[in-house]
Image (cartoon, rainbow, N blue to C red; front, top):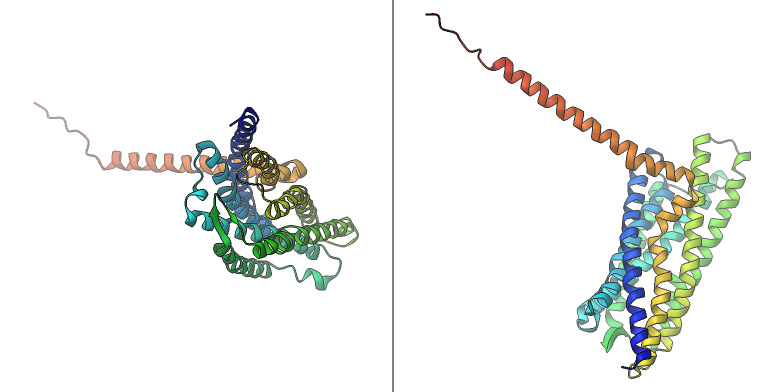
Length: 335
């Protein structure tokens, strides 16, 4: 190995490992907080857009666990199980692609639902229901479970874990990445989130409760920044993946492989931001969400902790008092 190859491998190592620690742990913590806020606050209960955001946090965490974590763990440890175990090679491909389909289409669902819920026409607003959201997500998960089965057949190990069938590579590039991951989800989510934003700007002219108006503003802004993050991080990653699927480097050329790994790592880091930074862009973009997070993490849990402590103290005090009453008083004998 010459100095150039060694330098590229060192760059790839440090980029992968440190970006893994910087994205996986904060990302998982952020998604846990998202789920807590959207499930514990009564304001979001029964809201279809909030339900889509919960599903998004679940499958963002899914991608961090099955896509990002094995990648940086294999580089950090020097042991890549996908190059040794055919079972893990196929299973990881199945889990990652299934999660990617659910995640991207769910973002489209959230944008469409927010457009419907803020629409001027009552008939369109009626289409935004919690029950419909549950059914849509259930159908989406079943579809993704069945759709991803095809990856179990075409992923194999030839020095690396990947697809080597030209026909499937064409499908992988222009159907999977364009139809389910790239072009169509980007266009749909961006279009409907912008239309929802236009609807929210006109909500002031429509008679509505103040609380509902503020909630529509908040959810529309959060979904809009979520879509913007999705677009900015997905476009370069999908473009690179389509190119690499159809133009893989010569595995017998160590320098070409090293260059390819560094480029892929840089684009992977950008793509990982899509699944790890959602909570933090919500915090930045929504002052109301910051107050809700502060309430859930500190005020509500702090009050619950103190209430439980006071309750335990009362139970102990009552038990001590009852024991004192029941215990016999010492008798004194007179000579």
